[in-house]
Amino acid sequence: MRALRRLVEAAPLWLALRVFRLLGIERASALGGWLGRHLGRTMASRNRIARRNLRAAFPEKSDGEIDAVLRGMWDNLGRGLGELPHIHELDTLGGGRVEVTSDLDDPARAPSPAIYFSAHFGNFEVATQAAIQRGVEVTVVYREASNPFAEAIVQHWRGKRGGVWAPKGREGARALLAAVRRKEAVAIMADQKLNEGVPVPFFGRDAMTAPAIAELALRHDAPLVPVRVSREPRARFRVHLFEPVEVARTGDRDADTRAVLTAINETLEGWIREKPDHWLWIHRRWPD
Image 1: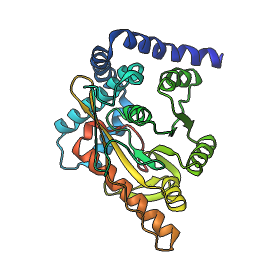
Image 2 (image 1 turned 90 degrees about the horizontal axis):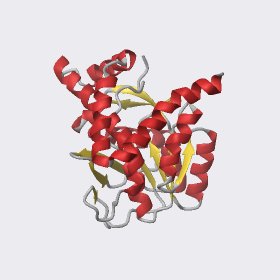
Image 3 (image 1 turned 90 degrees about the vertical axis):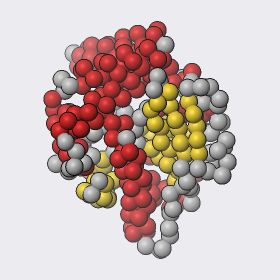
Image 4 (image 1 turned 30 degrees about the vertical axis):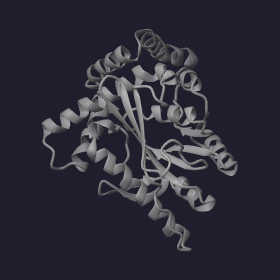
């Protein structure tokens, strides 16, 4: 019965992605945004979490401004879902839909091996397509869906891009370490809460932050490259690679790890302050 219930729960996702696939990316993005805005406002518990997070992060914002950020967040989430079955066809090497810019010395070629990090910001899925089309062997660590049927549906579309997709946990940790040892690139979403992590400031409050990304960079001398995907009108995107985060080695591993994590959180906070509607405020990033 449990498997049947999960199958029934995943069926709307399968159907929605098939419909989005038929529409083409611009119409799918527009429909996804419309659905996100209208369905998102019915999710009372998620909106309570998001409002609490937004009020703490932006105490200067009015209720109307917070409402606008929430509408934009749900719009962005819906658009991301609508765009999912089209990302593997995006041309990031010169097509008009994706612009790739870089602060690195060679914008045409990102460093590999490297540890790339991003956040649930804009359509973060586009960054993997940009890396893979440039011949970067990348292992992506992601949070697995709790419903195995939904997980299979999403991974079906992600798999069309290529790369290695490793779910967070023991499997992801093994895949991450193996890729780093092979001198390949890895990609990590650095904005998720880890209860067993390190308390590091984020929007003025300590947030439990996973130390693995900093520990890998310190142990394997791999550059930590921030990658931001900003949303542009009509299902267009800008992927920007920033200069690597400075990784200092003082001999105090705990202090060095905390310094790297602080720099990462400061980077992500800067992006979110610039475009707050691009980020996932419904995540329980801070302790209640």
